[in-house]
Picture 1 (cartoon, rainbow, N blue to C red):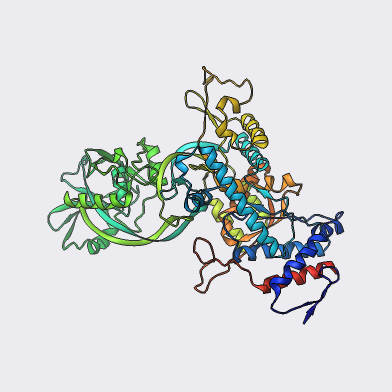
Picture 2 (picture 1 turned 60 degrees about the vertical axis):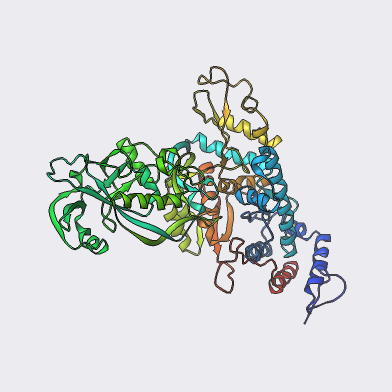
Length: 622
């Protein structure tokens, strides 16, 4: 079999033998000399544009076959549309901020990040990221993919950062950005807040405990009894501030083994009798949950009396029907705490260690605290049973380690406000496969707010200032001014300049009588970085909004598709993509997705894929 081309190949004939590795670079040199990409554009320059917007791969390490699959599929589409006569620019991009680059510097370059100035560390991050961009660019070009490789969009570039802040400013103008204390996914292994898109669910073995708590305010109940609760997070018991009951659920006072009296959900008595191995159970009385509101109990570990409250989330699907409530460690718990004026107690720090507020457990990591709490409850006679329970549990998708719910002050973007417009736009998008529409709808329907702040160093600073009284300056005009500073000086200006130097000239605020201001220390979620590429990597490059096509792996429903839709609708009222097409994953011999985190990635692409591209190139020029 022979393969000849007077236009695309060197003058010598190319015979299809096992020497692709030597011949393909020669082919690509010829294409570069002929400026093939721009010739293709020139052919269709006056025709209708077709925009495939490139979702940015993360700039860290060699590409693997999963990258190749994605880029080659995009290349197929762009070439096909070009053959149909469309004007098809291809602007590649890279995602360059975030934890993996910080980690790579510490792990591979032995950088002691806490011992050097923040700006110096950020410069090292930028240098490393750009090295990775150059490496991956060479490898992508080696696949035979044509595009504007000398003019890509890169999220660390000053002009991109400025564009990102302009989108943020638009969201501020519409009242979509707010700061609040709220339990969010927190990764002790990464020491930062996480968005839902950064969560994976894996099975986890947890201690399941049944705990009794002495009733204090019993209303007209004539006998002593204990409230019986169940939890799989014993380390949150120090943060317990209430017991929640369902207002319409029936509860029974029961006497067990002629000794102890407990209150549990009536429908769970039989199950509890089996699980807790009770020999004899006598029902004393029955009440509805709403009759229990206002009772109180003593915490089994502290001299603290807390109330029984009504909880919207209480069910009788398992447990005891009485829910241990810690407002600092769960969204439902937090909502209930707000309704009843409870403190948002969160006695655990960013690394997962118990704080002074946890009393005797101060300094213990949550896993150690689990053991200590269980032992102490057992020693005090309040632990009825402990057994191991395997369940699906949220994990940090990068470190693969469990996360916790932890109440902290974070910045949020309201999805609730955007929901109606987002759902309308989802209906207008062409989804391939069709089930993508339902998947995205369900994700949006269930979301209320997107946590967009991260406690990291390498990223785009959140452009918010604080007055002397601690109030936030959330002003779109101020943010747009900072965007222009970033455009000319880069985001390191945030760390190099004082707040007064970053604010517009002559700026004053009644809340700062001494004209003193401070800066926010958190950075924006990297999904906000890549999610605003419809402006920084598309509109700013002269490509039409919305794009004709977004094409990525199916994991991007929770990631780039989602963040792009949120920010795009917030900025323009329209989805940034008309069509969304997803592909599956290249898997290894065990059926696992190939990825760096799994350690099973392949750095080389099979010659067959390259051959397909070469044949398509030849077809384009016919």
